[in-house]
Length: 543
Image (cartoon, rainbow, N blue to C red; front, side, top):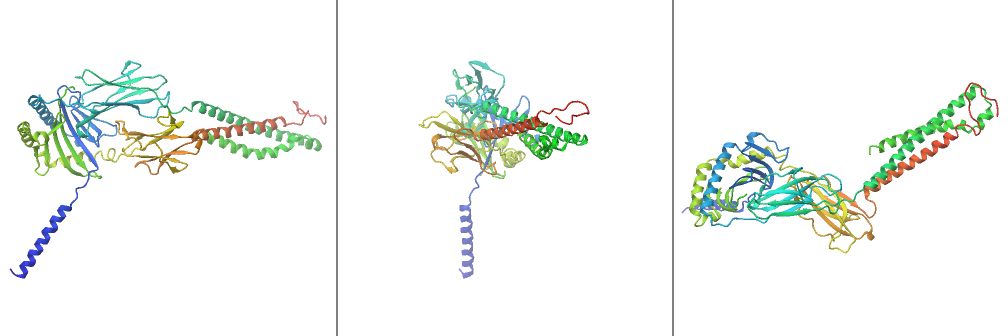
């Protein structure tokens, strides 16, 4: 072999080696979002036929009896063309029911999958007695998903003010369910949320009673409002008295000059020097009036079939890859294999005695949906694109409240709670500061934010406090929706906001008292002592 051929051979080997190395080092892009479209069927189900979710948050659900899509939030209103067509939903409905009936018959000996539902009841916002709020009943680890939720108040059923959207499919082939009750909490209230599956002989009941309310500032606000109002009235009365006194003094001086009053009498009359004072008082009165004006604006069934399509998306909404799964009784049986572009038995469906039945349905899926799957990733990308702004790019800033609660598991006399609520997305950082320095002796990191089921979350971080140390405690919140860190302060004694209210009210009351006193003095001194004007045009020349 000549040297030329050797060089060409070495170059070819080098190229192949480089290509293999590049392929080996190629990194698959991690998905940032998950768009799922799930079709569900159950023998006697309370489920919606199809649900679309993004990052385990519900976007839409489809009701075949109405032939309509229902948005979870009002601002989810894309065009009809971006939704899955009804013709495709009918195909999925037929397929789902075929799988359910055949698998239920052949696998009747299979135990029914069941999850022990976990029920929590909490308020949508921090508790304030006598203020409207919403109780949330969160049901997780729900399977089968058909469940009925009811509410009671003081042991009696409640139906008014209740709303219960359909169950939401989440990861691991499980479901979540939320129910809401409009309430106005009062002392002594007892509410309960009851969750029951139609085929179960028992129900799960979780109670809620008012605990750790935000300290009411009603009395303080009333007193501050009264002080502020009295101060404003005093200030107005004082300004009026000053203005009337000044006007009468200047009028009296002109009359005395016209009638040839003795200059000594004019000099002896203290009111004759009040005109310049009145001129000086007018700007002061105008300034105080401006200050007053500014301050005044102060199933049922046990066996369930999932037909689930998962579309993994990049941070910018580009479809990365697609999964398509048929699950029966919470077990995957058939999957879509991207490398071959076909449906194949997977999971338990790849083993005997289930492999023959799953192979049949896999072939049926290839016949019905095989051609459509080639463009399915682009279709799901197009569906999400119309909602990308109000969903994936959604940023709702948090609200923060700091207040003392009943101490638990601590010798300290006060425990502070920092409640952060109403934010989206879920990731949030909450820390405690004391006089501006980070604290490490709190009760640990905040709990995993709880979903409210309405595209918002809430979390809580507590801190035991010794009030004898004094200083200012700060709850600091960092979230992607905030341009800068959000802080809320607390210090022993009056709250920071209340201190501001007391200061403004006290200042206004003090200014009002001063103006009223000044006006009263000027009113009394508008004429010389012992001298009183009488009606008519003739005045005595002396006393």
